[in-house]
Length: 248
Image (cartoon, rainbow, N blue to C red; front, side, top):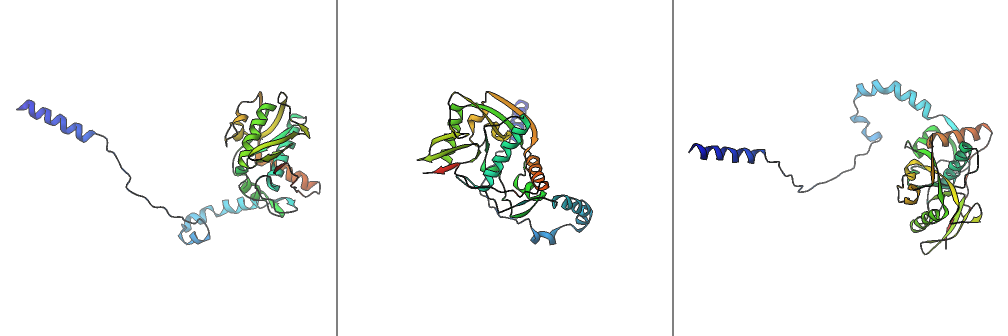
């Protein structure tokens, strides 16, 4: 009898200690706007507490650091915003190496906000580039650059500088770097960001370079410093659709 009770106790303990299995039977979602409509729900004491910090931050973020001749937006196969960004990448990389850089690559997905016409503020650059990405310089064989352009062709384009190509039936044609036909055996220097240098956003060929230099320079700072320098020299920034990527 005691043995039976003991076994029963062990069984009950085993059942009670067994992990529960949860099964989802349904779900629903809803959007909650985080804007002025939620101000009435805010904690007034917390608002008063953070107000001095917000005022100081707004003062910094609203500083005018440059002027644009027109609105610049991202889009494929090329765009004013992606062309401008990739050009600045290549300029910054050349200044870092103190030698020319063959090309630059920027993913459209990293360009999170357009730049306005007229005054550009610090806030605008933070909205454009909200990430902490850094500038990286890679050296790839021409054959790997061709593989990268094959990916771009299937995607309908990406942000590039120093390289041009035509897309026909989702395939790259007439690839030129520095105005010259691409050489599959030559090493080309490429300015990009550390996210793409890891092969992310489907840019797998960038993950296996012959050489890599991590500059430690924040992309956001590079863009702001370029704007400030142009502004000090009395120049507006601008961009053009120059046919660096075209679809036939």
